[in-house]
Image 1 (tube, rainbow, N blue to C red):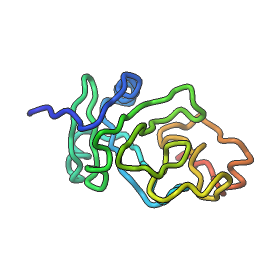
Image 2 (image 1 turned 90 degrees about the vertical axis):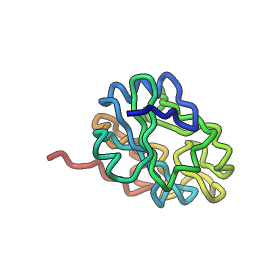
Image 3 (image 1 turned 180 degrees about the vertical axis):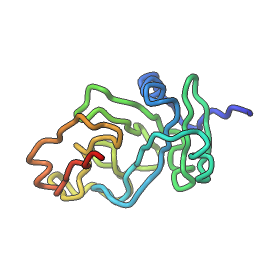
Length: 150
């Protein structure tokens, strides 16, 4: 199987986090967030992501799958993982294809409407993060409810 490098940069912290999560992450987009479209990340087994029509890219020690919806959007950007942020998260930096972006880098598309939006995702934990507790003010503002276990 040939390895294709992604048409975007991937930082060492992002590769390290993907490895820690099992070696494969799907990057997708969904409606929502302050600017209308939000990046969505999920841990996937290689075969599952490939079956979803995602493009498969190899990085040293990691596999990245990019949905068709984002295929042209990420070109020229940089995927990073910021463990020091609260919550720790993947983020897309310096994306030349998304000039309108929210300050937390989780949403893009329309002009940022300003702070205090009920659709804000700035403190939304990554789907696999079961330990981070968002600030109570943000939870009230967005109506966030932690996922139930089991």
